[in-house]
Image 1 (cartoon, rainbow, N blue to C red):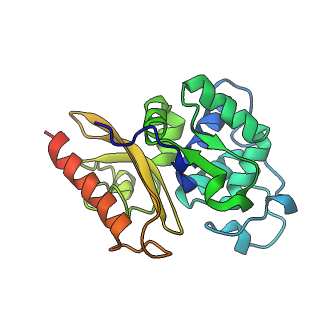
Image 2: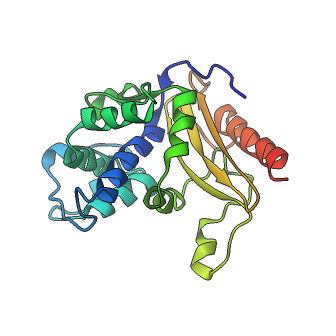
Length: 230
C-alpha cells in the first residue's frame, strides 16, 4: 500500500541508513577494515544529535565505531566523518543509484538542516530490502523508539539475555522542526514487512511523544503489526 509514495520530502536522519549501507558494502567487499581508526577533524564538527560534540578532542574511533554512533545515537559528527571517509556524499548517492533508489539523496552540507537529506517514502522503504547482516546488526540497536516501533514488542536488549523478542525492528528515524520520519524492516518468526512514513509541516516546532506526528507514526506501526503478525 502506498500514499504519496513518490513525493520528495525532507528525510532528516532517516537517510543515515544510506551512509550505513554504503559503508557495510565497502567492508563486505574487502575494500576497507572495520577497525581502521579515523582522526576526527575540525570540519567534522556539527551541532545536533549525538555525543561526540561533547567529548574532548583526541578521539580516534574506528570506522565501525562511527557507524554505530551514527545509527544508534544518530550522531552527526560520526555521520560527517564516515561520509568523508567513504569519499563524500556523491559516493553514497552513487551507491543509492546502484540500488535503484535515486531519490535518496545527501546534499552538500549538514548546515542545510532538513534539506541535507531528502527521500521519497517509496525509495526509503525500498532501501530496507537491501540490508546485509552487518547493517542489520547495527540498525537493530537503535535506541529511540518514539515513532513506528513505539507500541509494539521490539526489545533490542533481549538478545543480550539470549532471548528473541516477538518482533525485531531494523530501522532509523529522523526528526526535526515540524517533521518526523521513520522507516525500517519489521520481522517476526513467521513474516516480515517494510514501512516508511514521512511527515512534514506538522504543528509545533518540536515533535514530542504525544504530538500529532509521533502519535500518528506510532498508530501506523501498531496497526500494521496487528494486521501482519498473523
